[in-house]
Image 1 (cartoon, one colour):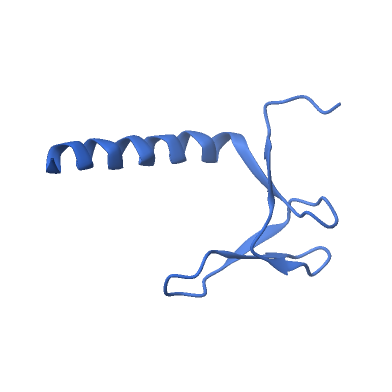
Image 2 (cartoon, rainbow, N blue to C red; image 1 turned 90 degrees about the vertical axis):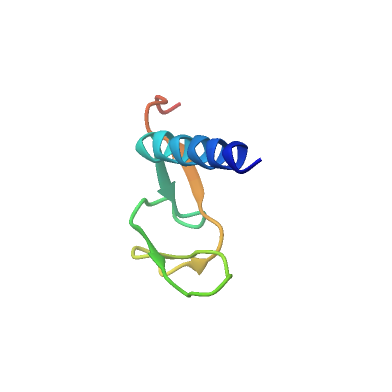
Length: 70
């Protein structure tokens, strides 16, 4: 059982790494990608801050950078 958990953990990490190279975080308000993560700590979700418009929140858009713009 422990081996299965290790395999699942490794698969999740590999998926996260592969997505992080293709995905750009974009502000849901202004559409800029100048987003930083604010470390809050504990069990809270990641808080994001847009340096362009000042948006602060837990939700951002993930845009595939390999997809051509419409």
